[in-house]
Image 1 (cartoon, rainbow, N blue to C red):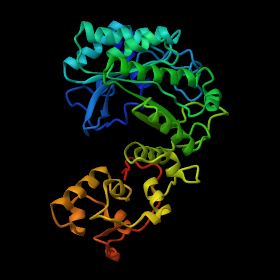
Image 2 (cartoon, rainbow, N blue to C red; image 1 turned 30 degrees about the vertical axis):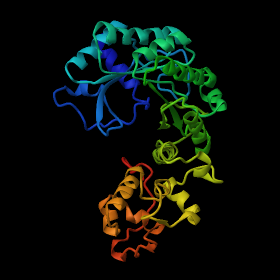
Image 3 (cartoon, rainbow, N blue to C red; image 1 turned 90 degrees about the vertical axis):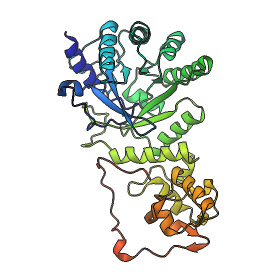
Image 4 (cartoon, helix red, strand yellow; image 1 turned 60 degrees about the vertical axis):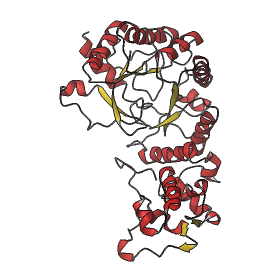
Amino acid sequence: MKIEQKLAILAQAAKYDRVCGKGKEELRNSSLNNDMNDFIFYSPCASGRYIPLLKVLFTNYCINDCMYCYNRRSNDIERAIFEPKELARLAYDLYRKNYIEGLFLSSGIFRNADYTMELIISTAQMLRNEYGFKGYIHLKIIPGTSYDLIRKAMILADRVSCNIELPTESSLKLLAPEKSKNDILNALKSAKNYTLELEKQISASTQLIVGATSESDKTILKLSHELYANRLVKRVYYSAYIPINSNDVLPKIEHPPLLREHRLYQADWLMRFYGFRAEDIFEGSENLSQDMDPKMCWALRNMHLFPVDIKKAPYERLILVPGIGTKTAKKIIKARREGYLDEQGLKALGISLKRARNFITIGGKLLPEEPPSQKRLKRTPRPYSKQLVLF
């Protein structure tokens, strides 16, 4: 099979892995033909820019038969496998021509976990050592891989990931009986230990599928909170279940639960940057509201903590206000040190007064009610919107 055919098959097979974030399809390279553009994934990074990656599986052959997976053993699909040398050469050629800045390499499990991991490591070693590749490398850690192979992967990679996929042991037994939660967690623990040993800033991430099984949002976020608290991952990615396969056990849905996925990301953001615990976000409920973001829901349940005086409140209180984020809270503190702060000044700082108005005062004075002409009709968010704003 020609390498172009392998690339077409294995780039398509990699699209369901979301641990490098959601891509931006409109950032296509005009100097590349359309076929090659289809294989380049534009991954968001913390600075706000998108970096082009070759996102691909080493192989879509897999010994596992996970019911939700496109690449499951029993699916009648076209299969392919790279040679380490040809994939390393392909990635380096794209990098040398400035078409990509890095490689995201995952894989189905071919023969066994260690054999597959050795193929992944061999590819990365050729890139780093033979071609002098200085770009970004994200490697998938196969659950059940031996510790010494995980260490080798950590030496070569900038980021690693090992996908938990389903939030409980019972859901794994139901849909992916060949997988073990302990194997996955042990791989993440090994990655954490080797990061400390190597004194190298390598982050780890994982993915959870949303909606394939009946677990509540609270169950999902409690697991995420534990992963963050134990420093096993830097990011948890949530992937709305896509109905690819037909099975009596799988949910019968027409569309992926994208709004639910979005709400989980909002709640996850509150845990990572606002100091919330899963218990704070739910307070008696099991699932996040579909009609309102979790920060607003929390604020309405805790009105005894409001209003907050913008001129006096510390940073930790400011970030609890709907419409005020971590960046705008810092801007408020800076602005009030420098001079007068009023309603127009808050707008100039980028604060959403439509959201914050009922939760703040300025020098102890409530803000005037918004004129009726400026009020927006309340409407339920569409569940399948393309882009939604976090806070």
